[in-house]
Length: 248
Image: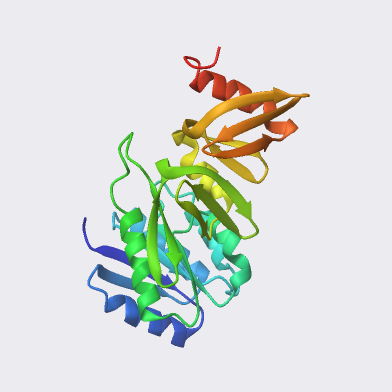
């Protein structure tokens, strides 16, 4: 794909200059524009889009006076072809909100060059052509300084764990910083079903559906999961539709 064109936004000038400097050292970055507040950043983005310029990503601080990073991200989400978002902040507590806004990554200050390089890699992957139907999505998972790529088709179910989601597979489970709501939107077309407020199940891995005393239980891979009463009717109907050749 083409080299990336990005915008860096931070109201702290030294932090903005350092971020812009590190981004310009990356061979995958073609051009870096900077803005020192949310309003200026929004004006710059509107001008870029209106002028036909390509903007692949925004590296965005959260705590800014006036228009903060989260509010700016929500406005950017209304663009016809919104740029991808990478949050760069000193505040850990906003991670869930950031990923609900479908951020590509969430970096904590002070930003390390190698961690920023990983964010650029994720931005590059997210900015590429959309996957064709049938192609498998992957979730990158950090494992002690290594990155493992967990394919969507390998996931039996996903379970909310505070600010994270645990992906369960035949090979083990993996904790990823993302909200269950964001993952549900991302995988909605791939047959993932909400069976509980904290659980998302891959229909392809459901091998058995049981009714016991008004409760519904699923066998997913080698695990048994309870379906909440709130979701039971929807789950039954969706699984029967998807497996109508197997379940009478």
